[in-house]
Amino acid sequence: MSAAHLPDDVVRARLIPPARVLAAPMAGGPSTPELVAAVVGAGGGGFLAGGMRTAAQVREQVDALRGLLGGGDGSVDGSDAARRWGVNLFVPDAVNTAIPAAARTERARAERRAAVAAYRERLAAEGERAAGGAAAEGAGGAPTLPSPDDVTPDPARERAEFAAMLAAAEEQAWPLVSFTFGLPEPAVFARLAAAGIPAGITVTDADEARSARAHGAAFLVVQGHRAGGHRGTLDPAADPVERELPSVLAQVRAVVGTRVPVVAAGGVGAAAHVRSLLAAGADAVAAGTAFLLTAEAGTSAAHRAGIRRCATGEGFVGPDGAARTVLTRAYTGRWARTLATEFPAAHPDAPAAYPELNALTTGLRADAATAGDLERVHLWAGTQAHAAREAGAADVVAGLTP
Image (cartoon, rainbow, N blue to C red; front, side, top):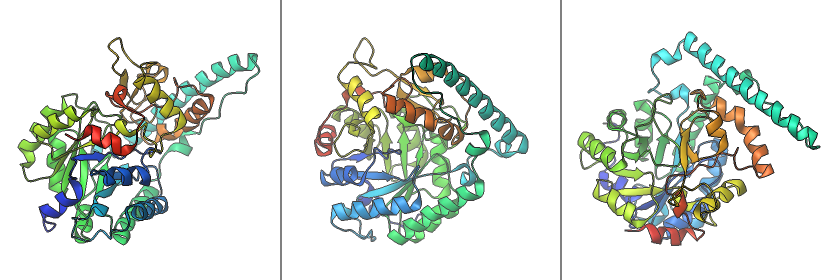
């Protein structure tokens, strides 16, 4: 296997922190150098979010994190806490080997484009109706939506941006790299391994774990269906597995054995959840939603307001006080878990088209956030959102440590 020349103890030293708790990467703002540094300083580990950022922006974040941690050059000796971190990268469709050939035909691309165009028309019609009511009250008009051409990704550009990220990883000697949203070719894992960088990948079931290891993944992040934000299925059109995470972990362990480092993620809100996942076969546990209300997180004002309402029981909770969440494609075209708002309920048939829908709805979501309309903003959250606390990241780590 391509990553075999990186000793298991190197991978584990960088990936598995003393507290057994990692800050999961949260793209779009919540993940910051300050958050990862605070979690590492508290005995945990974490990942910066490279998704939705350019390579230049990620380089700046890496430099900032290293400054906060006091250095750490990412050398093969991974015992230093200053190296207990990594960068998570999205795998664009252009380099995702898990996408079936049938989905890359001209016919399939035309059908996808037509589905995006139809979705755009539905959104535009809704905007016009809403603007008509707003105009009667003296408000502004409907936002202009980008055209299908504007949101269709350019494969050449996707490949170039992905290559720039890999170059940044090598040149800055990132201690760890994790991939999500797809499966890069084996040469990518081999390239990073040759640079002394263990590379892992998010998987959601045993079959994906098997494929990831066959391509050279040095570690796995097993994501359960209770996780907030996007599901990391390797095939973006696949429906997520809904088995409970301990069961998925057992199936993954049966496929990859006991030596492969495995991180569990999804629905983690208390130390009891961490203990149960460690007992089920994980080496460490990643949490995301639990950190959204920390001062160190870059959570947007609207997102923070939604999580706060859930955590205080003022909204987005059921009769039992637990968070009400749903899986939806409505915001981005990829399955993602959000607090249950009106927008996903209005669009249960959104097409599987990321990043097209993400670009299509960006303006709508920004306008809703500015207006404080939480029913139309994406409020990514796991099923334990009601347990989120407004506390320092170190306190959250302490509360999750088994």
